[in-house]
Length: 542
Image 1 (cartoon, rainbow, N blue to C red):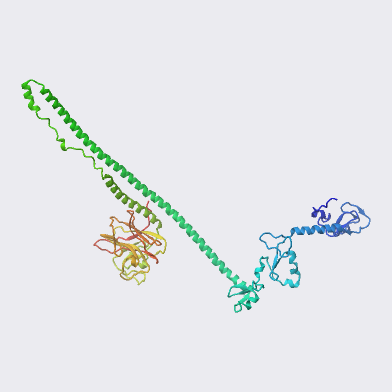
Image 2 (image 1 turned 135 degrees about the vertical axis):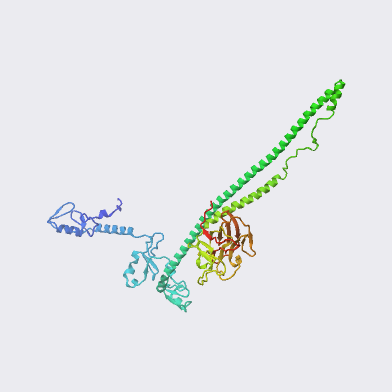
């Protein structure tokens, strides 16, 4: 017997009138099948009764009977299609706890039954009155975690003291004296706090993103500094190598010139000796020739002129001394070392000045801090001694003893650099000072008191300290650069025009804001000190 064909589809069970799956299929006497309503409505519109498929004519309206076999087969098909459409559980989804064999996907979990249900097994909870009261939630696994481990009861309360979920029996035990509220009440409280928590977390995220940017910027700056350092190093080393090569050429030339001088001296002496040898050889020939003559008169007349040798130099003390090569190389190397040290310092100062100029800041003078005898330009870039004390209102920020003025800007971190023109002045002071500072009386302007500055007078240049540090007085000092590395505790001063380093204070401790300050001095030493101190824009050293 041939096996039954189970590869049915909805097309095999379609009504030829409505073209849809049979609904209450019935058969006509000619053997064709239709939906009961379809064939009944079809014949109601016809004068004669005939089959819509084969057009067989029936003289009376046929008695339609249900096709039992077709109905059963159709029912089986519908069930198989519905089974195929059921949602089977996928990895990560919650399975139905009731399904046996192949588990279907749960659509709800019951917090009373502590069971998860698929559509089919959830039906009693939607129909039975008692089950309708159960609390249904979105599917969740590990429902056993919702039971109290100690009492095996549902966790439906929250202990505000211990911040834990508890069951009803817990309130009679360990949590008896603690404030306890239903879960939904604490849920509302905690939900209200989520906004604040989210904001705080977002703030933390932003802070860390800013820190990442800060770190990346630092790395980028370090790379740029490294590139500049390498470029400066190459420039310095190239210059030093050029100096060494020049020294080598000069040294070789000096040695060769000494050798050439010795050779020329030797050649001159040898030539003179050869000339004397020639004269003596001629004399010996004359003497030998005379010794063989028998002419007494000629012999006696000639002998007197030949008895004495020709005039020659006394060669006993004549010598050619070799050049003093011993020690020459050492002396030359000492000179090279001195030259290289000077060149190295010059080149290093130059490279260092280029680097610190990268940290130029735009600073302007604060009129409210200026001593009453000082006059400031409108742009806040110049200050000079006016010669007359102005009548100004009392101001706690103003210096009343020191002829100083601060800048408006202060610095509490990082690096900064500015330049001040000091041309044509016989006295001035400039540097940085930290808050708080004494502005109303005499003071010691030393690092210990919070002042890092250099003072120039007609005959000296010093860094004010305890004791003062005397600095080389450079002719033509016209512009001074001031560099501060707040975090490293460094204050440096530079002669900008000469491109050399003047002095650095290291190991400083900065905790308060630092203010650049300028002191133009007064008309002293019978000279004109009226020229202003000028905060100048930095002209990047090439």
